[in-house]
Amino acid sequence: MTGANNNPQDRTSYDVIVIGGGAGGLNAALVLARARRTVAVVDAGEPRNAPSAHMHSFLSRDGVSPLTVLETGRAEIARYGAVLLQGRVDQVDAAEAGGYVVRLAGGATLGARHVVLATGLRDRLPEIPGVRALWGEDVHFCPYCHGYEVRDQPIVVLGVHPASPGQALLLRQWSSDVRYVAHDRPLTAEERERMDARGVEVFDGPVATLLSKEGRLRAVELADGRTLECSSVFLFPTMTPNDSAFEGLGCARDEQGWLLTDRAGRTSRPGLWAVGNVVDPRAQAVTAAGMGAAAAFALNHDLVDEEIERDLAAHRSA
Ligand SMILES: Cc1cc2nc3c(=O)[nH]c(=O)nc-3n(C[C@H](O)[C@H](O)[C@H](O)COP(=O)(O)OP(=O)(O)OC[C@H]3O[C@@H](n4cnc5c(N)ncnc54)[C@H](O)[C@@H]3O)c2cc1C
Image (cartoon, rainbow, N blue to C red; front, side, top):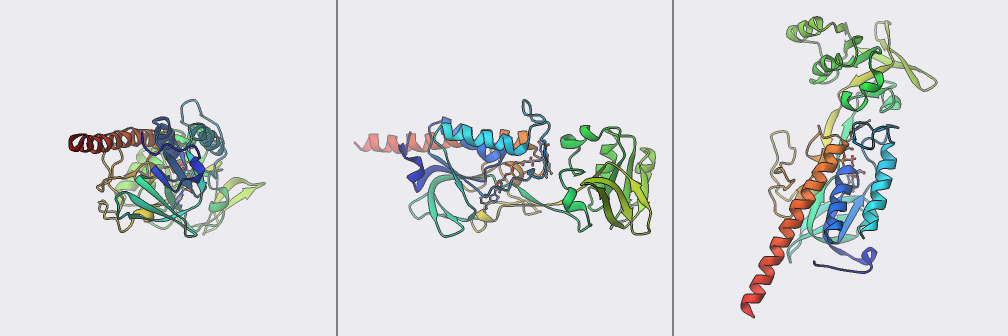
C-alpha cells in the first residue's frame, strides 16, 4: 500500500482522485478505499437525476430518493477513509514528476497518481414553457427509469430530437395510449408508417406549452390551440458529457467527441479513467455504479503492477 495517512482530510496528494460524486464516482471510491488506496472525491453536488424524487431499476434501492442513495454512498466511502471535497475541478494536467495535478475552481490543486472522471453529462432541454419545471416529475426521458410508473396512462412524446420517434415506439411497451407531437422536426414517411403500425397517433407541432395544475402535468398545448391531455411527457434531451477537465490531455475520442475507454474505463492516456454517463449516455445509475467498481478493480491492479515494477527495480539494484 502507498500513501497511508492518518489525516486523510489534510492530504494534498492521493493515490486516486475521483472527479464527480454520483453513483459512478462513489462506487469507484468505495472499492478503491477498501483496497486501502488514498482517495479523494471532488464533487460539485449536481447529480443528473436530482430533479426526480424516486430512483428506479437499481436493485435493492428501487424507489428510493436519488439523493438518499448518494448520501448513503458518501457515508460508506467515509467509513473507509475516502475524503469527499465539495468543489468543481476545472482542469487536470500532467505533473512533471509523473501522475496528475487536479486544479479546482478557486485555485486549489491536488496531486494524484491516477484520476477517475465520473462527472456525468448535461441534459439540454427544449425551450418549451413548462418543460423545465416538470423535468424529473412528469416530464421524463428514460422509460426504464419511469415508464412503469405511468404504465397504461396517456403519454405524449415530444419530437425534439432524432431519437424521439424511436422513443415513442419504445414507450408503446408501457402504454397503448402514446401520442407523438412532431415539434420541430417533421417525421419521415418511414417513421410515420412505423407510428401508424404501432398505433401511435401523430400530431404536427409545434408545441406551445405544457399545462399543469398544482404542479402536476395536465396536458400539452399545441401552437394551433389543440390540447392533448396526458399524465406524462417524454422527450429526448441533447446530452453533452461533462469532460472538459480532461481537455488538452490528448485522450482519444469518438467521432461525436465522447471520450473513448476500454471495458474497464481506461482512457487512451495511462492513469486517466472515465466512468458513468460522462462516457456512456445510456448508463443508468446502477450501470454507472458498476462501471465505477470495474474501473476501481482495474485501476488498483495497475497501481499494484507499478509498485511491483518499482520494488523489483529497487530490489535488483540493492
Ligand atoms: C430526471 C432523471 C431521472 C433519472 N432517473 C433514473 C432512475 O430512476 N434510475 C436510474 O438508474 N437512472 C436514472 N437517471 C439516470 C441517472 O441520473 C444516471 O444514470 C446517473 O446519474 C449516472 O451517474 P454518474 O455518476 O455517471 O453521473 P451523475 O450522477 O450525474 O454524477 C456526476 C457528479 O459529478 C459532478 N461534477 C460534474 N462536473 C464536475 C466537475 N468539473 N468537478 C467536480 N464535480 C463535477 C456533478 O455535480 C455530479 O454530482 C435519471 C436521469 C434523469 C435526468
